[in-house]
Length: 109
Length: 109
Image (cartoon, rainbow over the protein chains, first blue to last red):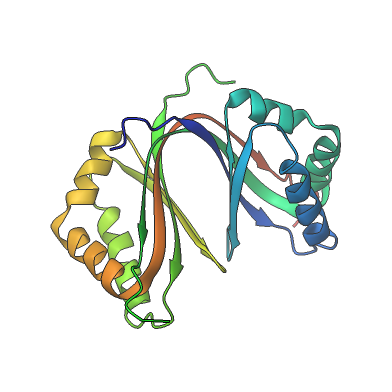
């Protein structure tokens, strides 16, 4: 374990959609672009099959609170609850350890 | 915020696949079934598009360590690195807060 590892935060957002999700993709893209401009934003991972999982990464809790209260994001959250999501769950997590694997290329390309 | 909230742990596993993933689905299903039998297992969320995200939930760090060292799971991890994954990242996280939204049905069905 790297002793220099500095903890940061992850927001795990899991959700299921209503049948009609008109306008959802555009809003999701807009919100992702907006999140990237926030202080303390570190990154995002996203995938959706039956359930959608979006994990966003933040420098600290303060950055998460600021993003949650960002005015355009507040409107998007409201629209999401009214129109797109049948269910969602939000988990605020402290990332305490991290490790990674990368294939070493065996070709000469 | 619920003052009775008891922190638990999440393992965020993000990955990208090699082109040939023969046998991967069977192994993933087998490992999910096996994880459910582990002490301290709480649940799992999984989705894959360009990137795969699997988040498993555990009662404490001890449960995560035990699962990481489980013998069949060790073999699966080795096979995953050798054959299926071009990259993966593992984040061990403490879930500190959580909240949920559920649509209230407006129909009489």
